[in-house]
Amino acid sequence: KQEVTQIPAALSVPEGENLVLNCSFTDSAIYNLQWFRQDPGKGLTSLLLIQSSQREQTSGRLNASLDKSSGRSTLYIAASQPGDSATYLCAVREQLSFGAGTTVTVRA
Amino acid sequence: DTGVSQDPRHKITKRGQNVTFRCDPISEHNRLYWYRQTLGQGPEFLTYFQNEAQLEKSRLLSDRFSAERPKGSFSTLEIQRTEQGDSAMYLCASSLTGTQDEKLFFGSGTQLSVL
Image 1 (cartoon, chains in turn cyan, purple):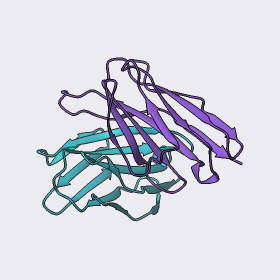
Image 2 (cartoon, chains in turn purple, orange):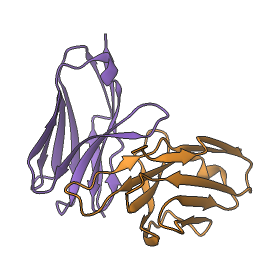
Image 3 (cartoon, each protein chain N blue to C red):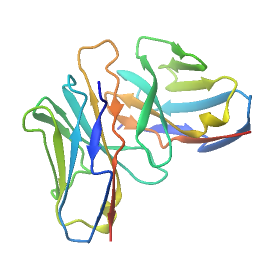
Image 4 (tube, rainbow over the protein chains, first blue to last red):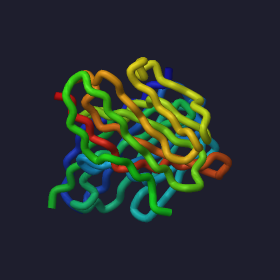
């Protein structure tokens, strides 16, 4: 059974600092990995999706890397802003397994 | 593309009552998923459909839970004889198979409180 872990569970940084969020998974036979953002009491918003054959994806200030052999993905958020405060979750497919998320607070 | 919509947004019910939630996926999406999420946890997979066929069900989905997608469009999730442990956010997501990335798109969820 695929296990997905996100460490740390919570993170607080001053505005402008770069964020590094980690996601690890136990079974490297994944179809793709997707990063989501979730605001309190809301659904999930897709940020980036990396196919199993890719090493990274970028969108604006966001960059996600994937290392299947070590079972890791990292989400980088450059020059954080208070609006980036949210919970960030990663999910691996085909097993449809989510991590518990990292809750980020960006202090103004 | 109006996104994935879920109804109702909130549901408060008494223990033992039945509840039904509805999900309308993005119109051209052929896959539809149901997840459950409790506070501080990631979403837990419950079941998914490809068109009208229910292809996989989690062991989390007890016999009190039933999901349907009769015409391959909207889906309903029914919980019979609700228990306090059923209190959670129920999330629906959809995707389109055969596309390059097959992204999941989520609705805003239905928050269930069982008193």
